[in-house]
Image (cartoon, rainbow, N blue to C red; front, side):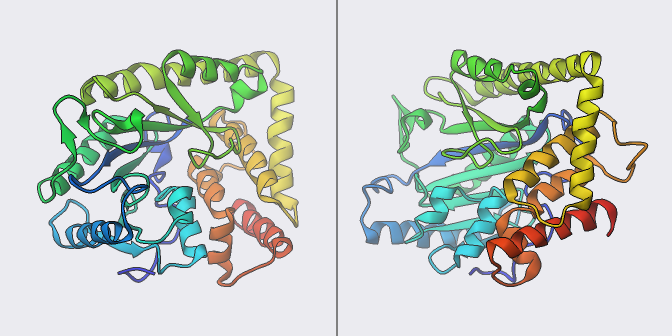
Amino acid sequence: MSDHDGMNDGDQTGQDGQQATPGADVVLSSRVRIARNLDGIPFVNKASSEQCEYVVKTARHLLLHVPLEDQMIWIDLEQSSSHERQLLVERHLISRQHADNTIHRGVAVAENEQASVMVNEEDHVRIQVLRPGLQIQDAAKACLRLDESIGTHVDYAYRERWGYLSACPTNVGTGIRMSAMLHLPGLRLVNEIGKVRQAAKDLHLAVRGFYGEGSESTGNFYQVSNQITLGRSEEDILEEFEGVIIPGLVQFEQTARQVLLDKHRRSLEDRVFRAFGTLGTARMLKLDEAMKLLSRLRLGVCLDMLKDAADTITLDTVNTLMLMVQPGHLRQHVGTQISPEDARGVRADLVRDILIGE
């Protein structure tokens, strides 16, 4: 699969240490991504097989041999199994598009899995940095440093008039895309999730599902990102996104949660404790059901509803479970291919074991 011994166990996708990070009750993680292309080579969708192979070989050599802040592990997607690629998607280290189109494609992953560089996805190089909670500025600084380190060894496609060129028009300019994974069960319960979509439309934001473009919202998680980079500086985009946009959406959600506590506490508690009861006793769980119940449990943990009944369940516990119940991680846990029916049983057993130690 790769130039390494295997993926780390547990949640290493920039979501560790949630309780110590700002806005962690609503913001699961922050991501900053930079799109770059090599000068003189067509974009991936227009490049020849030989040109794509050249990009992969160049990027692999550079990422493994140039001094970087984080040591990188190279994974050749063409040589990896579908299960290995699924794990990378679930850990938000590659996109679904990158996992599905594997010829002359690869990814470099930092050993702590808080940074990755996709090669020949939509652009020749897509650098991304992940952080837990609301840490856009920290992620941006790390991403820009990594971009600078790579850019000193290759010629990026850049034009004075347009800035950095990209296969996607919305990435032309700075090429920087900032996103936050938001947990918005409160807005869903008070039927005001439309506020997020309207705010996104007004502010030219993209709202996507749990795994980004083309995915559905799972467990009331929404990925919100900026769309326009042309004619704006990284500093302006960062200041608006982290200082205004995301805090505004977080406030929407926190207000909705307070309304639920003030006016519908009994109903909300019932929803949370039913989720806890089902997760703690179920013998079979489908993925969608598990994510829905874990979303409710996460809300209960954030609102301190479970501190008397189950004080050992933390935000980290629930965040880790949301990763471990995914299909690729279930197979990793078992160590072999399993049928959909068996997966439901394994998922339920795993959840019970982590939640109540059964």
